[in-house]
Picture 1 (spheres, rainbow, N blue to C red):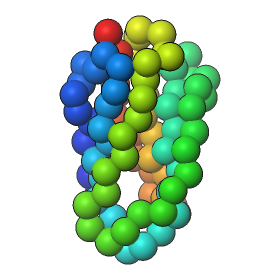
Picture 2 (picture 1 turned 135 degrees about the horizontal axis):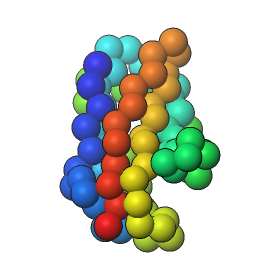
Picture 3 (picture 1 turned 60 degrees about the vertical axis):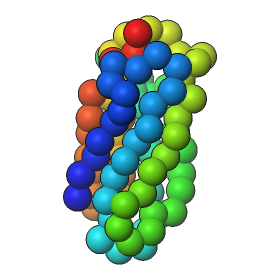
Picture 4 (picture 1 turned 180 degrees about the horizontal axis):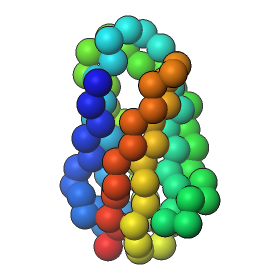
Length: 82
């Protein structure tokens, strides 16, 4: 499993790429630097590569953590918004 963000740093949009070894539901969350959840999106992953586009135009500049949860697997990646 992997979680990749681009572009990073981002300005108003980020693409989240992740790989799934089986079809499963997932929750994609964004937390601010204080750990507060500021965004949540649910979806269904397919086997193989998955791509999710996120519009960040309304987010304040700063550092965020992208959290991808699927089953008992949790992956995190830092996102810089400038």
